[in-house]
Length: 274
Image 1 (cartoon, rainbow, N blue to C red):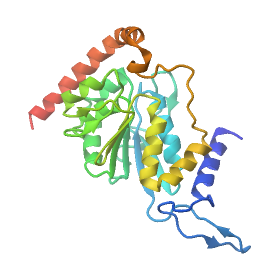
Image 2 (tube, rainbow, N blue to C red; image 1 turned 60 degrees about the horizontal axis):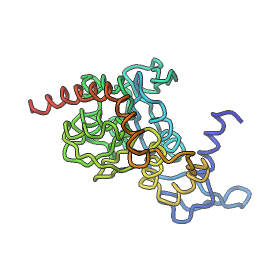
Image 3 (cartoon, rainbow, N blue to C red; image 1 turned 60 degrees about the vertical axis):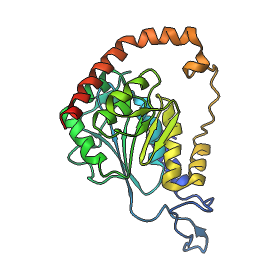
């Protein structure tokens, strides 16, 4: 089974599973021509999800949530950029956009931004990107991010007055964009849902799935993808990593932190003019 077939199988298992007691948005079972009952995919209007993709992004920020989103059933997931040319992630993975800013639906159920480093700082003051996020963000049902994607949302003015998560090494920059940093894996404040760094994408995706399809559905997704994290080390946050390792990583991050701070300060100037 190739990756594409596996993805389709996930969608089929989740959207047509018979184990759907109490799942939100699921239609009642219908009898098939053979007399056997079957459970259709979630009914009602199709969910519309837009995920921003861009050069030098961290692919994992997007890939985890995209797996969850794509298997929600009755959903359209758009990978959105300025054009349809492939963008290359910060580790060299090419990602092919499926829609341009102009082609992206005007009204979204979910607007999502993943993070990165240098590519992300460039987005924070890119007029075309900011205009797109401002427009879609003001109407989206959920405005969301993972990792430093929250800094991009902040630069678009979408987190002013909201609590938000971000990558731990850049979280202190959120106040420059009017947001309130919270040291949690997932932060939900009204219709803003933001995740921590990189690997938090799967946690974030399942959290949002529970909002969109119900907890039982999200639990099935978690089991089907066998998301059962058991890391070999307990050093995934500064507290568990300890002072020595954290200090080393902060030193490595210092140039990027400085660049992100300059981008945030530049973005903040736009708010002062309003």
